[in-house]
Image (cartoon, rainbow, N blue to C red; front, side, top):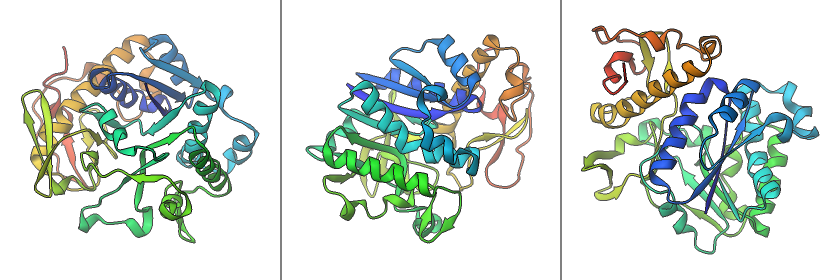
Length: 327
């Protein structure tokens, strides 16, 4: 059994539903623990009653130490602050043998068990940013990405989690300061600070906008494959970091240049699924437009022809991606 935890609020519900759908399709045996970061998110997820999923409210999760620092952090900074605490909560509350934290905007194309198998007797699994050289921000945001991290319920791993939680409670902000950045730069020295740490070697785990320029992605039947440094791998997961809806008619894919084939093969199907989930959520709550930002009117969006909208980053017309969106 693979145990995953993630956190998001109502604004990220469609992303979270995409994540769950990918696990249902590709993970053979899993349980997902979702920390609902507002009341609307908890209400909707409870109503959906997703398979293999436990929904955890903030009232059940937050302790005195987290509540004490909450007023000093932005919404995003508080989510970062809570990351190690969510993993600890799951392991302790549910008596788990292992728990993998995953960002809500990643999508699996293969069983994540293939990645976790690398760990062996190690207790902690980290994933590299693996930056494309021109986007390298290791000095700012760190060598490792929090996106996918595994901890076993064993002494060294638990010691690392408690240390990380304490560090994030002390300082976790969206700025670079004294060699720190958010919850992430704390991981830079873990290979020497702690024992039994394994860095994921399979480059098919952790493909993201900041490194996908180094890959060739292609379909082979119903599966997707990634070629990296001349070697082919079954694509495991992609991180859709930065994907945001800007208006009824356009969206921003990310802040990096993306090969057209990546947009077609990965972003197209992902956005189509997002829109299907949005439409389903809209049926559950007619007030959806009030709490899902920059998406007002998507449920009645007309499939008219739009010209490519050039602007900052990767701005595209939404209808470019809605071929699979049901009427």
